[in-house]
Length: 90
Image (cartoon, rainbow, N blue to C red; front, side):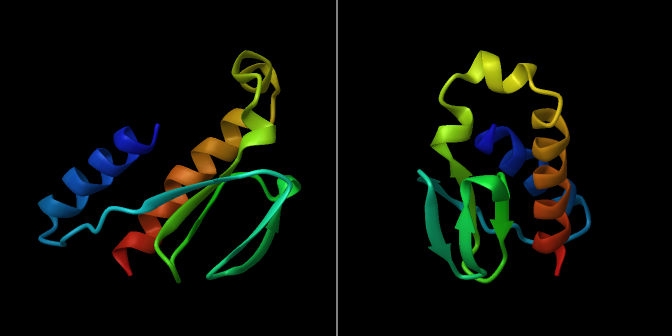
């Protein structure tokens, strides 16, 4: 997912003459601290523009088939992808 999202935004922004800097991936369990503040499992996947990192809680994705079957998973991933792109433009 990360490589696909990065390639998508790199292509879109390149067409607009904007250079895209690849984000780093941070995998965590329970809680972590990001450049945007603290995050818990309930936060869901997110992009932090302050440190240019994508944060994904492993516990929420431990059983990927069960995670993908949950109705809230797809909207969260779509939101992450959209917000990531919006932040990359600024």
